[in-house]
Length: 60
Image 1 (spheres, helix red, strand yellow):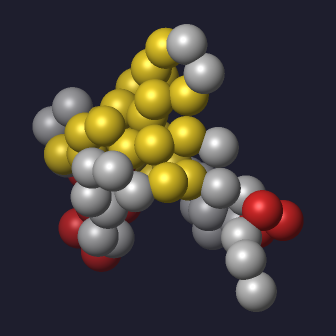
Image 2 (cartoon, helix red, strand yellow):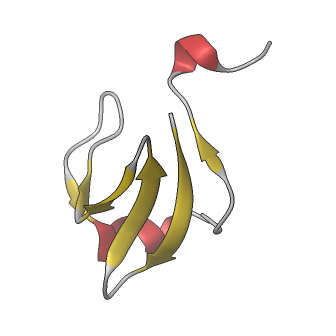
């Protein structure tokens, strides 16, 4: 799990997890092809402060 710190097509995602941050430049959703963040963000709405979790961790 992590928290979105920044998300923009130019710089990618910055996710805070644990003691530091990770910058994500490519995204691959399950059963989809890998995409550069620039393409992914054209259709996805991701905002700072949102939490990332795996499917197993999401509430029903």
